[in-house]
Image 1 (cartoon, rainbow, N blue to C red):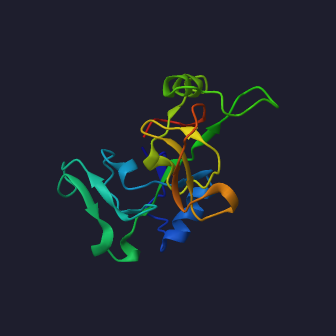
Image 2: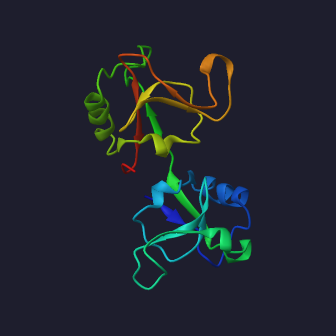
Length: 170
């Protein structure tokens, strides 16, 4: 779920401005799926779209409303979400990949008051290191870099991995 949105009085006229606004708060643009079931009657920029989610109570029809029919001047701001937190082995100078199961990784995230991220939540989080997710295991690359593979999701073949933790499970 979004951690916040820019107030409509301070509209972002482009996705780049919206991303900059989120980054000044240490956040990143939410994906469309991350705002699902988060009713806020304001069209905002997303990492992969622009629009709003409504529960149907006085703000359009229930569900996602695509922002394509809105001009940039009508966009209320940015839907910002917390960045994933990569959690390797907490013991310095020891192998990062210590969690042998999704349950172990979830428990490690819970020690930080977090939960495992989903694949959807790490899209766009360029990080070349294996980690458990709620629904997969691997990492995301925005572009091909060295031996990391990509672009896109790179699935892990390892039996032990680190963990991608999110402030609130998306």
